Length: 210
Image (cartoon, rainbow, N blue to C red; front, side, top):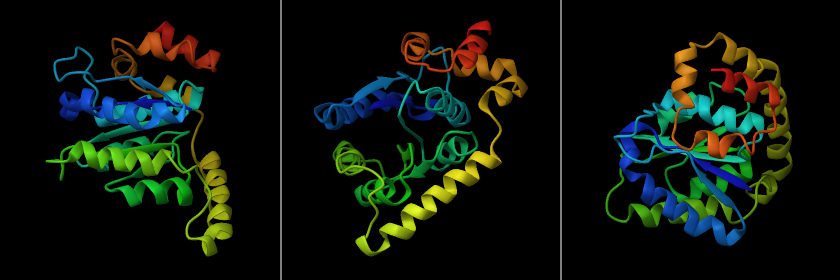
């Protein structure tokens, strides 16, 4: 699985620590981590949590990533922004049990974490435990056992609802402010990471034209 890490500007200084913790957990499982930044608070590309929502949608919709790890100060804004775009089913995780239950009950493809609120001593240990529970035990198997059938049924219903209630991403991109889209994809490693893995030629061509 290709996992994309995205940090918004208020928490950019923690990017290296979050990346190292994520890689420590998931690379031994055979997963790959692509770090889309922000890498420092001074990056020329300033990602807000709203831009992170668009970026997550671009990565997941085009197949450039299979999963997105993002967040903000509380994680709430990032979750709301991600769920505003098609192709993203984002959960808000604050502890390890959230990671396990989101993976098995909701079976989403994106998580938003609080990287400022309650993020003090031992923060990297807590992140490590969250990532272990999120990625270490499979997805969509249900929890608890007696709830597996209705949970899996409801997930399929939710996927169907989202398919009907969201417009195609390419149509959204054409209606968004071009400067907003251009700023979202202006990260120093975006082109290097995105285009070789993107499987949607129409979206790739649109972005390159910007």
